[in-house]
View: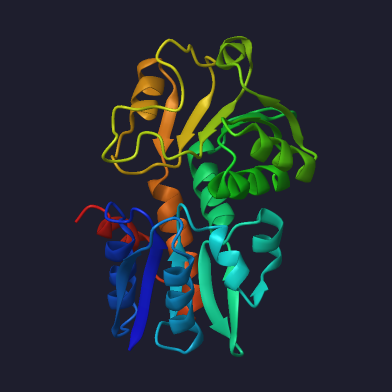
Length: 274
């Protein structure tokens, strides 16, 4: 019996149970995927749950806000990707060791490339990343490795400066949203939870911001299906998407790490509509 789940807070909005249970069924495996809401400061509950992975009671876990960095202290080892990103999104047991991995960077870049397609973005590709938390780290890691020049905008300036020191493709850290109006960003990525259900009328950018005319907007928030940020971008004639594709891509990779089976992406996509 394969037992999987998601650590986070809140997690009631998550589509992961639908996706991963569909993956189990598609691969002919017996098991289930559960939600484990753990309050941000409850480190004992976090440790107790991770001990169930260590003991084999739980096969593997996903990790989401706000625990992507909190779980690191309980890992026996981190993969090179998780170590570089400084955040964990997938946990599994290997040779009796609790391993922290990160599938977010792979999921994000795989889905982004589907949306960009064959668009000619030029040599000096420029992206703005909103936020500096665990999800931002994965996005920055993916974009940096793909050759993008990056700017970070974050309320917690210390976190943003720490990221800038880690990744040399980050050109600047911004706090003044008005400077974006004269920018030439080709990609804007929201990695904050702003706009997530139930706070669907919030956005990471002020109402009156005019986005760069040729920018692609990518919002990691996927619930609701059209966030305010995405809606506002589309109203300005921009190509915009939520992070549902990233969720599906990283879910498939996580499932493969846990089970050794590669689930069909089409079935995982279909599960998000049920």
